[in-house]
Image 1: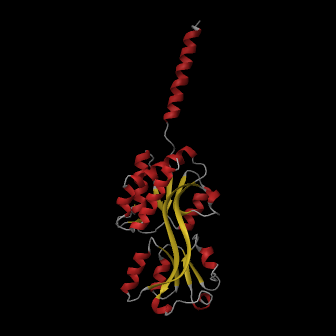
Image 2 (image 1 turned 90 degrees about the vertical axis):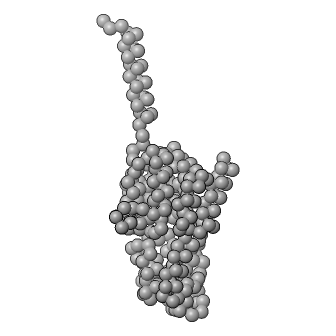
Image 3 (image 1 turned 120 degrees about the horizontal axis):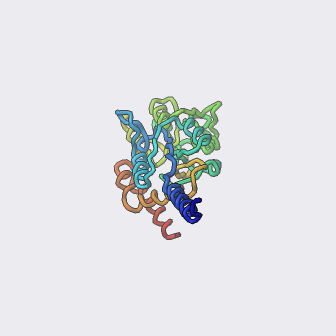
Length: 270
């Protein structure tokens, strides 16, 4: 007959072994989804997902020891998958009241303003907002968080609002004369100004639309402790200069300082 104390010791050893193993197990890998939206996210000439926001996410993955594939999809498809499947993170996702309960949020990755712009040669004078929907065609991309604001000005898809499948398409349509107005954030304004100048034109602000913030949106099944780790790592990247080093070549100083100030204030509020 076996010694009861030996059996008890062996069972205790197994309990400790398996408990320790369970604690040490890493989180299951996350799948990251994004869209084509330079300079934050795009495919380079070798077909590799890159961009300043993508590189920031990869640095956070390394710091948190959380490898995960990053895929570029059309925004509408990416949003649909992120809402239906588990273990996902979608970026750069505008955080709105409607979307608040859809995800768990880490950020912001960006804080910015959005206004409606057109080319001066077609605007001539700054149009009366009440008359703009009768004279002009607006354009934005499908499933954009800004559609409600544009429609509130009197633009509608069955009459004078074009919806495209990809960010940047509307800017091209405005430059080609196929649309008159499109929303532009201060993140991408400098690039659009440059493109307009190449065709001998300049941009005219027609209407301020809104202030927005973009986030990493995690599916609801992701553990809240894991979300907190990502939030802490992101804010640390704002404080230690990592974000600044990546963003400085493509974004203005005011945009970078907004994020640094957010991280600084969050430390004060702890």
